[in-house]
Length: 356
Image 1 (spheres, rainbow, N blue to C red):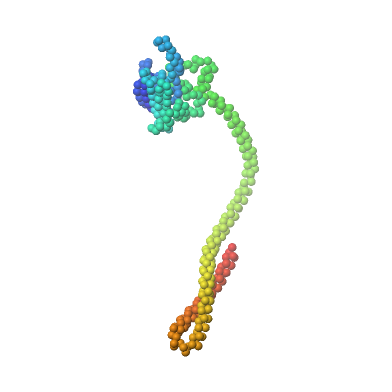
Image 2: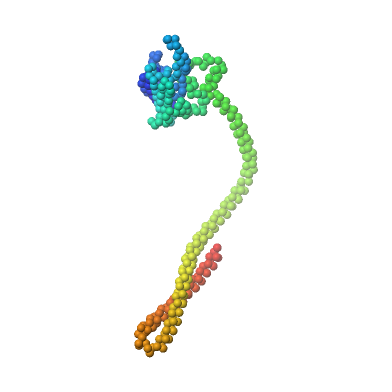
């Protein structure tokens, strides 16, 4: 975390003051009462939940003899004001820009968090701010104490308090530094590590047994490698055969498509043949009728001069007979072609069966 600026509005001696912090070591100097401690305590209060010990509800004796027990909010507010604000602008290790705004009144206080100029959380409460600061400082797991103690014991030490821990009794000194250094965390880690050590010891023993078994298996590897090479050659030969058969299969597939086309053509010819046969049968019947009529016409040829219309019909029937004869010739040709196609189809089917 790198502090960039502090803005105090109606906070004790500060009416509206922004303090920009540069890089490197910064020294705050000034007369007593100029606000040096206020700056430090404002940072601690807004970011770490720190309340100065001498302001935690301790009674103050007023000049008139009455006792006054102030709360932290009243002690931060500038005299004569009802509201105040603490603005802390800082940057995390990743370069993220944060602004924490702590708004204080005589009866309550609230927080706002902004990240890179955008509001991240409005009024997250004191605990929300503390959680965010823990994440920014990356001390969520490494430090088990409160952030208030982290600020007062590690981040800053107020005047007259730097030697206080060393003046405590031995047990209190131990408790004090154990919390700062997170000794209990390391004790827990040491205790938990015993289970980890035992766990990995069991794994190590299991691995040793596996190594013994694998050692025997490794001795037979040369013979297995020879067999593997032999199998690889066999697989390669089989693959070549498969490739050859795939080529044959592809050729047969093409032929089958042709045969399917011929079969369709044959079926179409069969249908056409049936139509022609039906038509021929009908024409034959007409022919028979025409022959009968022809005979009748021959018998009545002497009367034909009177019946010109019948003569024209006769000529028409003659032409129909010629058409019928043409259809009969076409039928014979189609039957011959159909027989040839069936013969060729049977030959291709036999060849296909032989190639399977």
